[in-house]
Length: 614
Ligand code: G6P
Image 1 (cartoon, rainbow, N blue to C red):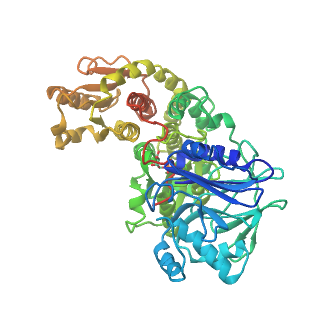
Image 2 (cartoon, helix red, strand yellow; image 1 turned 135 degrees about the horizontal axis):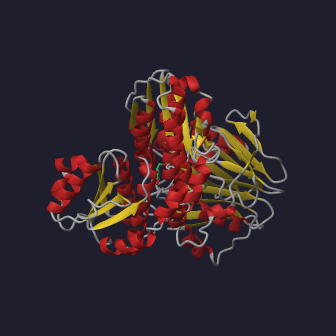
Image 3 (tube, protein in one colour; image 1 turned 45 degrees about the vertical axis):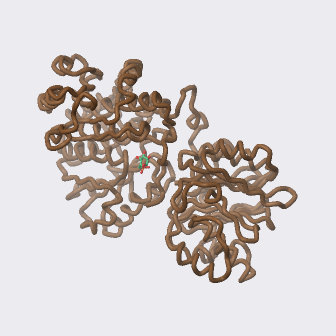
């Protein structure tokens, strides 16, 4: 969480920093700030509670001149959102300013020691401790900013991506990372830094992903230098960015979320491109074929993830068990990491993360690696931490997802899991070539079938008006539709703040049925699969208690149509592919209900897209 941006060059830093903050706003949006060294040598720090637009309004009449600066958009951890807790924080003598993404776990101990030395604090944040510590070391040892940062970071326990500038030396930015992401962009006579590449992409496509415990020394007129905490130089590995600016803009849609929902036919095409080939007869997943033995001999697969990715993981379990006959366990990464897990070198751990930066998932990967398991990553963000930490993996290739509520990343993850399962099944011989080809063929048609499903848009928009003011929702599904129910409920609560619960349909009678009355709508995901007749009973049970039912059914359905209050018909696909189709109307339903309620769907309250803290 939190986004950091930095700039040094010959252009107006403020404009670049503000644009960068807008791009990173998905990471946190409770306050924002900038620090710029003016041509007169002033360190101007401006901060404001709320969104980046509030900061812009606040800065309107301020002196924003300067060609070096750092900026921050915050998702509060230590200290409530407020002007004074907003970053950048600056040192007592006003010489040093710092922005930080992460958590300094031992900040209390450090603060205590600094108080003893006479430091005064002006915020409740862990970050201010770091800037005061850097200043203290700088003054006590009479050393350079770089040395002071190195020494300070040796004292720190926790996660950080930081950028530091000083008034007295307006020709350098010192930046560093541990567990939180940091990218440096190399332009002509200018350099950029940011939490991810999105603020950089319109200026240069040459980037360097800073590694853990590396410090970037970014000096005007000098090439980028990377050193470790012991000041030993590290190699610079310049990568080429493949993101285009249009992918970062709304492209005529009112919100990123709607754009991303409607992009799914294209993103799914990108996801399967080069992987499902020969008209579906072959499924090629390099990460699987390159590690054949690991998958063939796996005694067990454990999938770790958080949030929406965890719902994709649950689908991964159904897919891999069905197709590959390997036992699969699914764990919340946050639970797994502290559960004293039992793992061996015969286990394969699959870590799923859209951002590739989720702190709990990263920690789970490290534990799994330490215990000898083979770790496979499924991520979206190229160059992010999780693909780097895992032994192998597959990108979902759905392009940047900006809306905080995940949509196209979810369907991309499910698609990759489907292809991974098919690739393993082929290696293990648990499916015949004919069975694989049959599914492969349908996979190539999925983008078109998603397009067809998106035609429900107007119907759902209308339907959403009826349910905008419902206070609770229940989502039910069985088999492959159960994780879809969980995901549908999560989408609704994330962006509309309506309480919604997803349940395995048969569990309804063990509790949730008590909630059902005329005020409680139930969304039932009931495609034509082997559990269809079972779920028909659930529809009856809800109707018998005067509950209203919105049912997602397969085209041509008659039985549920006669019972449900509203039906949304989706194209028929084989059971294991239904989640990609049935999740589409649920995304639209949550979107329109939130819009009707006037909520900010792209930046829902209290949430952040990239969760780099525990
Ligand atoms: C946050 C986001 C969710 C996401 C989850 C896991 O909660 O708001 O959309 O599913 O983190 O993120 P990851 O990047 O690991 O998939």
